[in-house]
Length: 109
Image 1: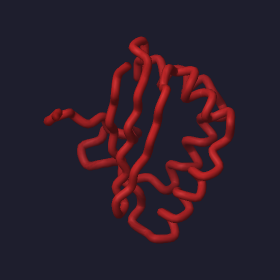
Image 2: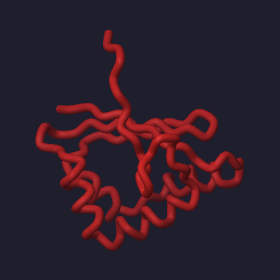
Image 3: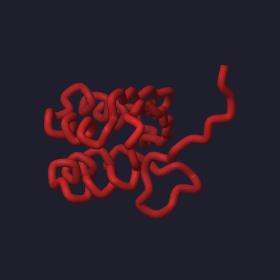
Image 4: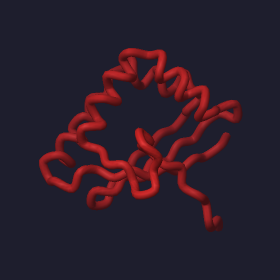
């Protein structure tokens, strides 16, 4: 098992944040299936203010490159990404079109 932590911001408007959270209470089975097929076994998203923090646990074969290719080839995932992107803001330092940024682990107990 591998663990990955990622960060992303939301548009800092109460209504946008509420809608983003509402969307995540009704994620379609097709999106859940695509996440699992990529080798992600656990995905948790936390929020403080407009900052999101995602923790993913994956199988040892998981690859962001493979996941990105799978997502690009899946019209349902592309539709979902377009829907949620309306509420998301790239973090400072993100490349154009880059959303979630992988965080560097700096401490472990």
